[in-house]
Amino acid sequence: MTVFEHKGKLLIVDCGVLFPEETQPGINVILPDFSSIRDRLQDIEAIVLTHGHEDHIGGVPYLLRERKDIPIIGSKLTLAFVTAKLEEHRITPRLIEVKEGQRRKAGPFDLEFLAVNHSIPDGLAVAIRTEAGLVLVTGDFKMDQFPLDNRLTDLPGFARLGEEGVDLFMTDSTNAEVPGFTVTEEDIRPAIDAVFRTAPRRIIVSSFASHVHRIQQVIDAAARHNRKVAFVGRSMVRNMGIAEKLGFLQVPKGLIVDVKAFDRMKDDKVVLICTGSQGEPMAALARMANREHVIKIGEGDTVLLASSLIPGNENSIYRVINGLTRWGANVVHKGNAKVHVSGHASAGELVYCYNIVKPKNVIPYHGEWRHLKANADLAIRTGIPEDQVLIVEDGVVVDLVDGLAKVTGRVAAELVFVHGMTVGGGGSEEALADRVQLANDGAVTILGILDTRTGLLTEPVEFIARGFVQDNEWIQGATKSIDDALRAANKVKIVNGAELEDIFTQSLTRWMQRKYRRIPVITSVVVDA
Ligand SMILES: [Zn+2]
Image (tube, rainbow, N blue to C red; front, top):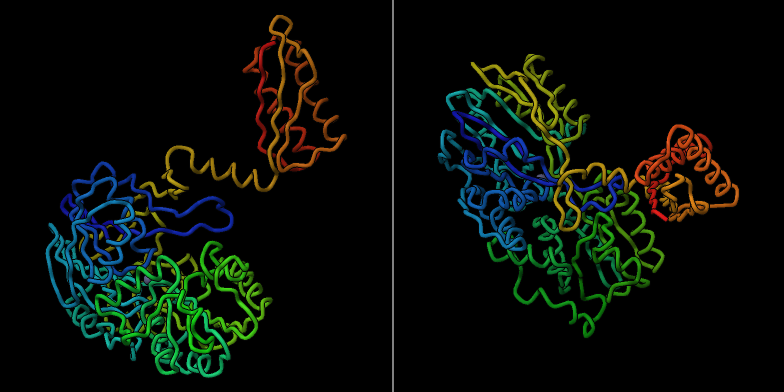
């Protein structure tokens, strides 16, 4: 989420989510921190969405919960995807549909939209003109010269803006470390065809539910090889329905069937398209790998993972591939066939853009730190002064004044966790820390019964452990550490229950740290006799 401010008004560009890593157990998604704009919701003129990927639209329902009528500006497909998402949250949005080539005002922001090509159709870059200067935000993009929809990234538009004078250029950094140019989507057609030509039985394709062009390739191949197609998975069925209805997906009549019809059809006449290409445990593909799905994978089935392998998901994906191959499937993926191309511009494309946009200032954005750094280095190599290339983290405030961009401050930008129905709230960082500690070291509860007159326990403390192995040595050592601490405290004064709970927790923590070098989550409960 990027927030622009001019004359006291705000413009938000994209509002996405992050997905949790293995170190963040129990988290569904991670939201941007709205706290710095929470007091200024009425100043927001609009949210501009560059494209329909989760990491650009996933946070919108949560922002709209805070103010429902913020206008959302985006292309037809982007708005359709975000509307479907908002329906699940029972929110009816205020939508403003725009197309490439259009200009429109949002308060003091004069917006112009330019076509960009990406791994989802209908992406837009946005140029923002204000009295402070002209900012060009690319969104996610690449420069595929043979896109399936013939909708090219608007390089003439980029060049025209460059002539006008771009004061700040914010550009996709994801593939800045990759030399050369990202190859065209068309290039993977032969590999997909080879799969269809040689697969002896069923073909199961897994891809992102938003990658309309990749699914189009599979549908085209199915039509060429006389196979019927069924979609499986809620997001896949929903998104492909939307894409077809809006004309972004061309489906020959009669090609799509319900998966139930597969029972009556020959195995070499069907293709199943599902989600789960990132190894998500609840998705159809992982359930097939575990034999928990109605589709029972068997000898001769071919599984095609027509997708990227997002860093961090490797273990889950390989677990799924192992499961599928164990049941006899032949698994084709980007590691053994050319069945995926990236949706992001490589270094060559980024340099090309710097040379035609000729920006005064650059903020490399969208990527991890190493990607931002690589993108910054490219900008500097094209002659942009080093001081005018700003690598900034979430929360950093940049001012654009008199054609000069400068870091001038910082606002709160915590990770806001969504777990189940709970969004953020106090202590969500601590709750996650507890969860990791529970996973690593388990939990121990100490129970004591106190005689308030003497300050002594009426009987030895009891320990209740979870996810933690107690042996006799541990119980003896733990009991002794508690007894010692109680005696030491009573030398000074008679203690009460609440004090005693603290003493128990602290002494057991110290003892375990010393002896075992690990600390479970320790809770003490003391009741009066
Ligand atoms: Zn994207």
